Amino acid sequence: VQLQASGGGLVQAGGSLRLSCEASGGTTSRYRMGWFRQAPGKGREFVALITWPGAGSYYSDSVKGRFTISRNNAKNTLYLQMNNLKPEDTAVYYCAADLTRGWGTSTPDFGSWGQGTQVTVSS
Image (tube, rainbow, N blue to C red; front, side, top):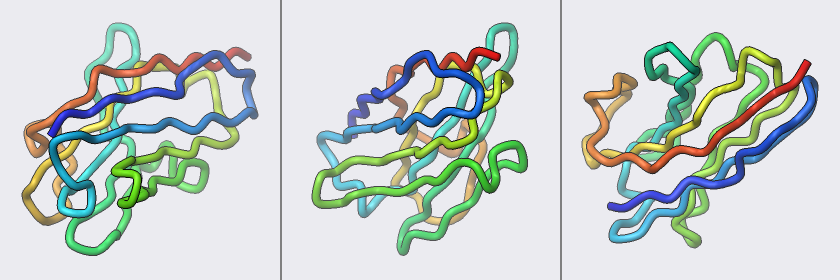
Protein backbone atom coordinates (compact mmCIF):
# COMPACT_ATOMS: atom_id res chain seq x y z
CA VAL A 1 0.00 0.00 0.00
CA GLN A 2 1.18 3.54 -0.77
CA LEU A 3 0.46 6.29 1.74
CA GLN A 4 0.22 10.06 1.24
CA ALA A 5 0.05 12.25 4.34
CA SER A 6 -1.23 15.82 4.33
CA GLY A 7 -2.77 18.47 6.57
CA GLY A 8 0.23 19.74 8.47
CA GLY A 9 0.90 23.40 9.03
CA LEU A 10 1.65 26.18 11.49
CA VAL A 11 -0.76 26.67 14.40
CA GLN A 12 -0.71 28.50 17.71
CA ALA A 13 -0.66 26.63 20.98
CA GLY A 14 -4.17 25.52 21.91
CA GLY A 15 -5.21 25.24 18.29
CA SER A 16 -6.25 22.24 16.21
CA LEU A 17 -5.21 20.46 13.04
CA ARG A 18 -6.47 17.38 11.24
CA LEU A 19 -3.98 15.23 9.41
CA SER A 20 -5.04 12.93 6.58
CA CYS A 21 -3.35 9.88 5.10
CA GLU A 22 -4.72 8.63 1.80
CA ALA A 23 -3.98 5.02 0.92
CA SER A 24 -3.71 3.54 -2.55
CA GLY A 25 -3.03 -0.01 -3.64
CA GLY A 26 -4.75 -1.40 -0.57
CA THR A 27 -7.87 -1.13 1.58
CA THR A 28 -7.52 0.69 4.88
CA SER A 29 -10.09 -1.58 6.52
CA ARG A 30 -7.63 -4.48 6.24
CA TYR A 31 -4.60 -2.72 7.71
CA ARG A 32 -3.39 -1.90 11.17
CA MET A 33 -2.57 1.79 10.82
CA GLY A 34 -0.79 4.33 12.93
CA TRP A 35 0.67 7.79 13.27
CA PHE A 36 4.23 8.50 14.36
CA ARG A 37 6.19 11.71 14.72
CA GLN A 38 9.80 12.79 14.67
CA ALA A 39 11.05 16.03 16.19
CA PRO A 40 14.42 17.54 15.18
CA GLY A 41 17.28 15.59 16.71
CA LYS A 42 15.00 12.88 18.09
CA GLY A 43 13.92 9.41 17.07
CA ARG A 44 10.59 8.54 15.52
CA GLU A 45 8.00 7.98 18.23
CA PHE A 46 4.60 6.33 18.31
CA VAL A 47 1.55 8.63 18.52
CA ALA A 48 -1.62 6.65 17.79
CA LEU A 49 -2.83 3.28 16.50
CA ILE A 50 -6.03 1.93 14.99
CA THR A 51 -6.23 -1.83 14.83
CA TRP A 52 -7.38 -4.41 12.33
CA PRO A 53 -9.69 -6.26 12.49
CA GLY A 54 -12.11 -3.92 14.18
CA ALA A 55 -11.15 -0.35 15.01
CA GLY A 56 -9.69 -0.33 18.46
CA SER A 57 -7.45 2.62 19.21
CA TYR A 58 -4.42 3.26 21.38
CA TYR A 59 -2.49 6.43 22.12
CA SER A 60 0.80 7.48 23.61
CA ASP A 61 0.48 9.07 27.02
CA SER A 62 1.66 12.41 25.65
CA VAL A 63 -1.34 12.80 23.31
CA LYS A 64 -4.06 10.83 25.09
CA GLY A 65 -7.19 12.94 25.52
CA ARG A 66 -6.07 15.48 22.89
CA PHE A 67 -5.63 13.45 19.69
CA THR A 68 -8.11 11.11 17.99
CA ILE A 69 -7.28 8.56 15.31
CA SER A 70 -9.96 7.42 12.88
CA ARG A 71 -10.40 6.12 9.37
CA ASN A 72 -12.95 6.37 6.60
CA ASN A 73 -12.76 3.08 4.75
CA ALA A 74 -15.04 4.35 1.96
CA LYS A 75 -12.45 7.05 1.25
CA ASN A 76 -9.48 4.81 2.05
CA THR A 77 -8.19 7.52 4.35
CA LEU A 78 -6.73 7.61 7.86
CA TYR A 79 -7.08 10.73 10.02
CA LEU A 80 -5.51 12.23 13.11
CA GLN A 81 -7.52 14.98 14.78
CA MET A 82 -5.19 17.00 16.99
CA ASN A 83 -6.71 19.38 19.55
CA ASN A 84 -5.17 21.58 22.24
CA LEU A 85 -1.83 21.47 20.46
CA LYS A 86 1.33 22.24 22.41
CA PRO A 87 4.75 23.44 21.23
CA GLU A 88 6.14 20.02 22.13
CA ASP A 89 3.87 18.49 19.48
CA THR A 90 6.03 20.14 16.82
CA ALA A 91 7.39 17.39 14.56
CA VAL A 92 7.12 15.73 11.19
CA TYR A 93 4.15 13.37 11.37
CA TYR A 94 4.15 10.08 9.49
CA CYS A 95 1.36 7.63 8.79
CA ALA A 96 2.09 3.92 8.61
CA ALA A 97 0.27 0.72 7.75
CA ASP A 98 0.75 -3.03 8.06
CA LEU A 99 -1.28 -6.12 7.13
CA THR A 100 -0.52 -7.91 10.39
CA ARG A 101 -3.14 -7.95 13.11
CA GLY A 102 -2.68 -6.90 16.67
CA TRP A 103 -1.53 -3.93 18.69
CA GLY A 104 2.10 -3.48 17.63
CA THR A 105 3.25 0.12 17.94
CA SER A 106 6.95 -0.09 17.18
CA THR A 107 8.32 1.24 13.90
CA PRO A 108 9.46 -2.25 12.76
CA ASP A 109 5.84 -3.38 13.16
CA PHE A 110 4.84 -1.33 10.10
CA GLY A 111 5.82 -2.19 6.55
CA SER A 112 4.48 0.86 4.71
CA TRP A 113 5.15 4.53 5.46
CA GLY A 114 3.96 7.86 4.11
CA GLN A 115 6.32 10.73 3.34
CA GLY A 116 5.54 12.87 6.42
CA THR A 117 3.85 16.20 6.97
CA GLN A 118 5.26 19.03 9.10
CA VAL A 119 3.34 20.26 12.15
CA THR A 120 4.65 23.38 13.88
CA VAL A 121 3.03 24.71 17.06
CA SER A 122 4.03 28.19 18.17
CA SER A 123 3.86 29.33 21.78
